[in-house]
Image (cartoon, helix red, strand yellow):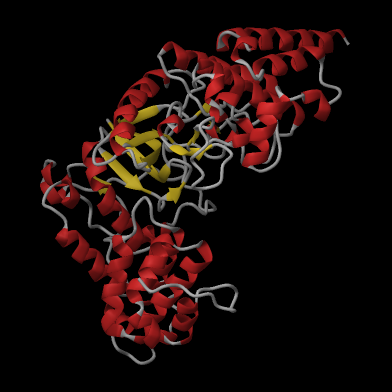
Length: 516
């Protein structure tokens, strides 16, 4: 690989600056550009993707190869810039990208990877399509759209809001038979016409960009769908990266019912075997605990071809919602009930923070939205490196890796230091107390970078909610302090004990309001 040298142009490597200035240079540096697209910094990846698009514009004979390399990277771990570059090529040169997709499909092994819908109009695929009654003649079902049917179950697909930016309707804007209305002038768009590069690719005559990318994603997910219990799964969006892997918004059909599904394909750490073994146990227990109203439901899961879980689709999290919960104490009590239920099934969450508290999109009463505990036990399977340390600093014997994705401001002392014990049910007590702090004060328990937070957690003891909210009632102050005690012996013995005392405090406060 070419050694990167610093450039004066916005801090970009010299090689990237050269590729932007001269497509001929970009052509010779294609392997380097692909490497940057895989592992480079975000700004560098954006430039590398742009340079690859310039290569495709300048050298028609390389368009198929560039599209193929991008499609080959369009998996759960792909960076966003891969999709951006592919979207550009799909809009400019749809026939070339379509041919690259077909080539990938033809190269796939005979089996589950080929059992997917090739219908551009549907944008989805069937499980076991080639083995279904009627074979290829079996129609591919669409997800339910707005106004169709009566939906009573909040887990079911209930709308396809035209204003929802997450749903690309290009697939449904073609002709009724799914044929592209622009096929007659495809040669002009994708040929060697000297004016082809001047066309912007917009308008009704250009196939939907998402159609191409979703077909490539569908090919990669086809083996998962083959193993799924759903009769049909339809991919609605491209994968988005989250703290544990890649999440795909999908619609599932089972026994005539349609469900909004969040399909997560988990990122594998270096210790793959340990992760897979732990995931089996965790997923089984999560599925059992999902019967509780405050635990996100798991519809299906498997470890092949890599660990994945199909769960109830949710919208925002406590970390992202713009409005604070109208009943913060009720919210934490509900979550505590769900955690206690998970503990009864032998499942410790280990990473309770605002990002792991989810909410449904479909609600009738927005004033009291049911909180859902997400990803119990998953975070502890994947580690991010010693908590509070810089990348690569792994020599400190008194530090332990923090569970993957856990917000360090909500991490218990035992997340940072082995001497405080192992991660167990008491750790979840701490996490609930930290959430209670957030909801009672509208502030995080600690502030600063990871290293600063670690020092505060281990040296200052339990967070002081009254420092932020002097008007906090004594009863709530005591609950927060006890739940977030540095030493486990000073915390509540169980989540149930925490839940009970918090509920009593809430009832007392409500009684005071009634008396007033």
